[in-house]
Length: 208
Image (tube, rainbow, N blue to C red; front, side):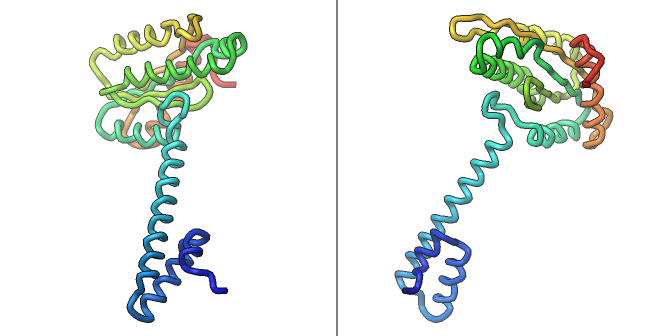
């Protein structure tokens, strides 16, 4: 028995579309063919919606709700092309002991709170993102009182986080660098300088 267009639509939308098109070209389309095309359209729309959701998830960290590295890079380039910009690299201090002492759920709570604080601080200034692990990044437009703004951010990131009746002590090392241009290469160079300064702030010479 020949496979109907409706069934083919579920199995292979592309093949089903070709088959339905052939039926239409051979004569006036019947109500059955139109119904099959309607089902095919629904299948394709559902697939597009699923792909869009997967893309959104891939570009957003589920724990912090911040952009992932690739998504943040695109946003950062937009900021850099609009004028003078500054990059910040942020690394949480003693994050592993929190996980070890209180469990991964507590660690996720710290990451989520850090993400919320960075998102609030960058609102209207630029964008924050999560690079992975306990490392974060932010890009903002340069401003007259930058040192004061960064000091305020440090205070926010050092504020204890409440979790399951416990106050978790957190801190962060911050490295700052001006972006020397509006190209991806300039952004990358600034991130490298900010990374080195972050590790100096952390009391280490740099990445090993």
